[in-house]
Figure 1 (tube, one colour):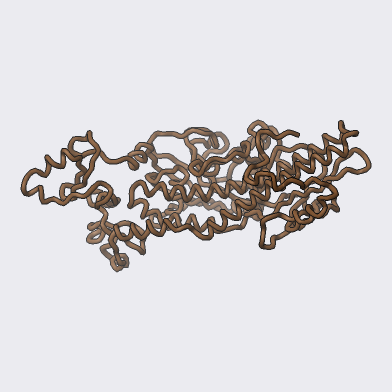
Figure 2 (tube, rainbow, N blue to C red):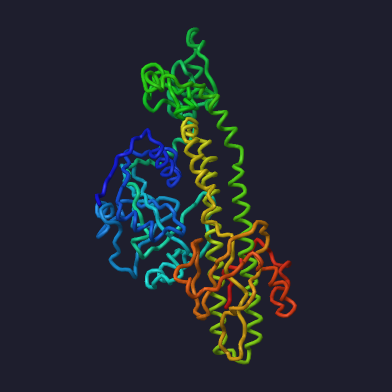
Length: 520
């Protein structure tokens, strides 16, 4: 099967989607893709689809300069990623594109030279939360698909960066290789008020379209002191034609129109002799760029109802995860009381089971917060763009809507909790999972949910945490099927006997149990 690299036309929706994704990853509306090639490798596609069909997949921007050794750019395109050691694997960033260092390392390269990046899909599935040292020396357990690197603490909506460590090349699919330009100083300048074009010292206060110049108060007075020049109509900076900038194709011409069919700003030259002068584009209806901008600004102020619903769903699920984690902690206390006389051996088994349950819930909470952070990050970037180049904001609006639409998909939203309060004390000192323990209903859920969550094995081994929404693999032969929609209701029914659910109303729902003060 032949491997192909297909050059994308800048006029295609695919190219526009990639460029906006790059701007989002760099948090820079001035970043530009110079060229983009779609990678077609049928063998890798089949492998990826087979391995990652039913697990969570995410997008990852990989700095091409970090591709070294067996994973050079050409080799990755030809045969995919190859790991020199399956024990080490490779880290992949999700969210921000980090440049200037090895794959997944922090630090941005501030040079303005053209750069290259590889856009991949990665199958992270359900990931165990561990630190870097553990991830590099341990194998990924059978019921997980990847390692999430970190402690589970997520950033604010302006810092969307996560790292996953994968140890199977089947979970990585290279999609595009791009060359782009990004100048941080240009991005910074786009957010600053312009200097006066005459004195180049003072901040400009007015714009004169007749002179095509930004002027401070003093230079405005001097430049328009004659009878003829005093007739020039000036407007305050940011409120006149200057706010939309100059045409990309005709840099000396201001943008005056907007094509609602092509979704691009248009200048007079574009309309008369450029891309909207002939053919089908000449028939497109152009509207005033000011009118189009105001329309989009008003539309951008309206919240997306689907994303609002999803925010609420995620927030509710995080609360449910924390409730379950707290219940697991209470269950641990009860179990400790029952096996106090046999503490030395049984306690080790109990702590292992509790840790596994808390790690499972921690992982689910982290993934839910990541999804919520992804929504906030996208919407904050939209607000951020409104303070910059208006034409760029207008240009990017349709792209932003496409990214919003992608987040409407709840495919990998985990609306069940597969951690049961099912630990019991048997006749000996061994601690195990009660296979006959009734599942406890998940609180604050109105719609019925699908079952088939896996019950952790009673091995008593301590874990390090997990994150992700994929169904655990290799558990089908030994897992216990649960209906978690009734988990809490049934748990409350047995509370008088076990008394590990008491006092839940006094617990702060918004405070996660996964804090630094955990004791086992």
